[in-house]
Each structure stands twice: as C-alpha cells, then as structure tokens.
Image (cartoon, rainbow, N blue to C red):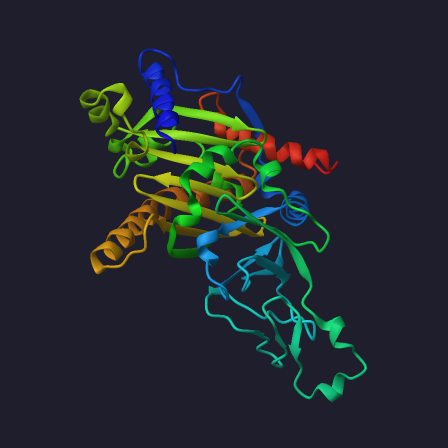
Length: 384
C-alpha cells in the first residue's frame, strides 16, 4: 500500500481517537434467521452467487508456473484451473468427458497432462483430448467432441476469478468497482504461497464471513487471546460498489504515533486490513503477510473453510518456514477454538427457531453491508 494512502488512513484513525466514533452504518439492520437456515434460499444462493457470477478462487502465486493447477467447487460444480506454457490460465469443468470423473484433485505443480483416474482418458493442459485407451471402441465418437468443457477464468492484480460457464466473460475491474486500485498496490503476484489448510464445519457459509466483519465481539469472545492487542472501538470502513474494506488497528500503533513524525508513520505493521470479495472470500493483509479465506458452501448448514497464507518472499530457511507456520498456527488457534465453535452454537440456535431474526447494529457497518450486498444480488435476479 502506498505510503500516502497509509498516512491518510492513519489521519482518519486519529480523528476517531480524538472524539469521533468509529465508522458506522446509517441504521441497524434486521435480517431474518431464514437467511442462514432456509434450504430454498441456500439453493438460490448457490445458483446465483456461485454459478451465475464470477467467484474468487485464489491468488496467482498459487498457480504460478506452467503445469501448476488448482481445483474448486463453485455452486457444487467442480472446476479446474491450469497454468499454460504461455503463462495464461485456462479453466475447465473438472469432469472427464467419458463418465464425468474428476481429472484433477487438490492443487499441484509439474503437470504435463491430465489423466482421468477412472479409465485413463488423458488431456493436454489446454483441455483437448490427448488419448483414449482402446480408442477403436469409441471410433463412432469424434475425439473433437471429447475435449474438456471450458469455463471462464480471469486473472488480474494477483487475483484469480472463475465462473462455471462456457460463455461467460469476466472483467475483474468491473467486479471490484474501484477496490482494485488499492489491491494493486500490494503486488500480490509477487507473493509466495506458503500453505493452505481446510476444515469442514457444520454451519451456514455466511457465518464465516460474518465473524470477520466486526470488532464488537473481540472484548468478550477473544478476551483471553487477541483482545489485549486490538483497539476494538475504532475501525475504518469503506465501500466499493458492493464490496468493502475494513482497517482494524492493533494497539502497537500507539508507539508509531508517539515516536514518529506524521510523514514517517506506517500503517501496515499495526493493522489487519480486510478486503471482502463477494460472495465468499476475504483477502487480508496482516502485519507482514497476506491471507485468503475462502468458503465453499456444501449444504445450508455445512461448509468448507480454506485458509491460505502467502509470504512476501520465498521461505528459504527453516527459521523462516517456522515463522510462517507459527503465524498460521496462531491464526487458526483463535478462529477454530473461539470464532467457529461460536458459529456452531449460533447455527443451532437459528435452526431451532429460538429467534426469527438477527440484528446487525450501527456499530457493525461491514456486517450489515455484506448482507445487503448479497440480498441486492438476489433481488436483481428476482430470486430474493
């Protein structure tokens, strides 16, 4: 992030500390509990938000060299993305044209061909059919009809988006609605993917994003872990169309403010900066690294959470590797023992009918804005 932008954000923060309240929403929002427990709404979300819109699937550095690849499920649809020899990305429905088995799993590198594990049909990296064992048995099916079906993929600013459609066109500039100017300043393509960890949870996928949208819960839920290190009252909030960014401050900024002249102050080492990428991802700059949280909905009350850590430089020594592992360990220690267990309890309470609606307060502006954005997308389709 440019030093000028960092200084401007610090000035806004000082305004809060000098008597102004944190950025707030114009009013509280009431959201029906059905947003988290209604199977019919869930199916509409899967269709509109994950199949009929582009979805962020990762960072460029996860799929950096020719032959590297990643897989995902978008609205239940299996997809694969492969780096080509010319440096571009191509995406496919991750389903063999013979019987529909996935041709790739997980992520990896060094791919020279895609081979279906069921009957060994093989495909080039561009998705064209390479070979069919006992090809004579399919001589009445043209090989040109057996290429992997393509999907839409776009890459810019170190971000990768995909949509499970053969005919879609993706413009990341249009999607981010101005946020890309700030994201570009991080030079995400220059980062190194350190590790991704995934875990399945029995609650609605939106609760994952909810827990990152506000600091209001920190003093109570995190009183024994991170609460002493955060200023939970003052957070900067900006919107970019349907997207948003929050800047949350660590108490270490007090030393920066006390010891440095205004023109020398830096924001990044003292903040957690969160970019909410609709519908299901959170890009975070924290201290000295970048994280990406991705949520894959499975059912209305089940989801897969993927947490990735990216380092600014390749970790070449054991000490550096231990440093990044410790960072990821600490991050998941908090979310997986404090945040997400609470989400399990919330899901159970909402599903029981104990409350008919939830309330997002004015002091939780990013929370209400996130749900208003999702509701707006659903309404635009006539399916809210």
